[in-house]
Length: 520
Image (cartoon, rainbow, N blue to C red; front, side, top):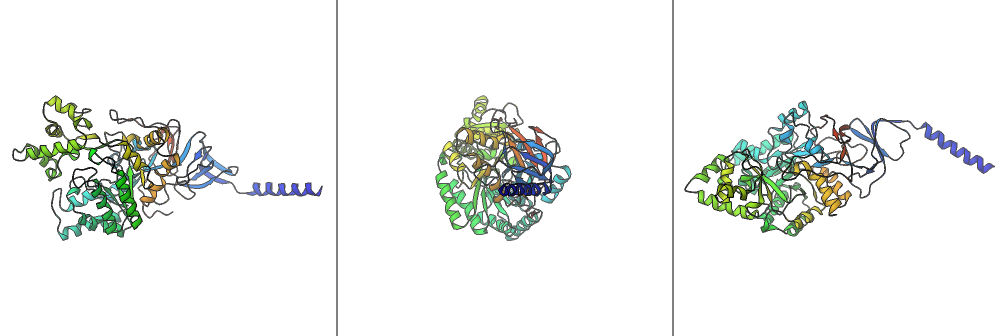
């Protein structure tokens, strides 16, 4: 009898304690899903409570949680919102009609890095104000573009800057860092960045380093067109070594048959640099075709000095056009031949959706000459099928490689990179497991770019959360129809607000321009 009374008293005590616990009020409660927090290797069956723009509670006991709205996530994966480290989304974000950034939202991306490849909208202060007043559909992490800095001081030409001009460029980098840039990007493959010497990049990178920023680079060569891929990786590491700042290699690849299967050598270079104490990371898109402008793909860099008009003039000049054509032909060969270059954006409908070989045959001229006939029509982009599965898989498995899209018009990666990586490389091929895919698409990217309180499902972090169906999450865009939204994303929560609900966009613009010092 005494034992029974004791047990009864203990039970009553816990009931009283439980009932006396204060209720926790939340705006949004997510229950019933498989929760991957962006760090751990195993999912948890926990609920997530959101108040305002923050995650304020994570746990498995919801009796004392009172929610204004509850999402039943049964059968869904709950993940940190994906962070895309390499995009050209700023070209859409500046326009009211495309500021929703829906091609990225539908992939599960809640934050985009902009200003990549050396190209940023300048000055940053002006565009931050635009984004904040107009509204944007995803968060934005801005970089200062190397090209804008060069062109502001010496223009778009193959000219060595004076010591005073280098000081002016350093001052512009400092101005943009003060305005909120997280780092500097370079496009050393593209003019005018391609004209820049390593020491000049180091001088600007030192300014970035003093401000706690990152150096993001499109390598000077991703194949064998100039200094060679391995030398280009070594140059990036050397910039990090001398300027003493983190180096992030954008869309790492082995581009062209000349450099296929060099991924092992690159991985060794990076690991040796990491042992030395240099922070080297990279991003990668899950496609076997790159995309760029037609002239950037195959035209000689020296012929581009002064801009596209100068390039076309040289291609018509009887004195030098033979040299232009010869070097263009070599570059076409390095990319696998004219049948591997597909026109994906062009003002002239005759060329759109055709390979360079098709156009060459139609015009009855060599492919290298056809390049300049097509360029006469305006801005032209190509998809270039020039990568090998061995290198794609090899890079993807590295812990220092994260998911990125390089999302730009005309290539399916703008609409499908993240779901494609999940569907093809996690579900179908098993190159990665699900936790590795999520971690490489969220938390690790936030750590690389020093984005505070993002990329993880953790109490006190901002509520950037996605829920997707593991059976249907996949890309739909392809090279012939690059503008198809991905499917299978059921919910996207950005700064605590529902941007996608039950697979449909809610018409909300909940993104923010993020700050390096955002700690509350």
